[in-house]
Length: 166
Image 1 (cartoon, rainbow, N blue to C red):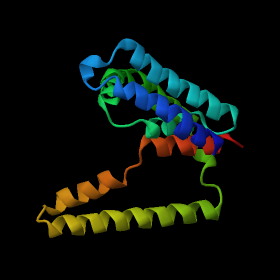
Image 2 (cartoon, helix red, strand yellow):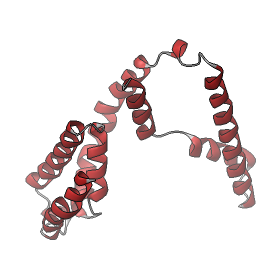
Image 3 (cartoon, rainbow, N blue to C red):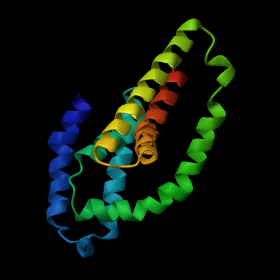
């Protein structure tokens, strides 16, 4: 809460001042990009030191950033690096740390799997129905439901972090 207040009342005005001086993508210089990345790094270190996950800091810092030319440039410059360099080892590491033999050992675990399966099935079915309402073919509606039911990287990170905190 103090961290979020710091972001809102101290970091946000600084970022807004920078944004005022970088109205166009051509105005954004290397030191502006480095400042944004340094802010995300500092936010990550702070949240890790207070006991929250390191990604919470960077995620919250990213939420605080306004949509402007500066964030567009930072996104463009980091997109290839993130998708080609950082994501493959991350997913490989996640895959190597999961121990399937220890996951479903009690009846409660299987109950959870059944409930999640039924929830996903319902979500896929209702999205398929909504898609058919808009005259999409049945298979495209089901594919849309599957796509919308897939989990994102933040979910994977939170599950990994919560299972590793024991």
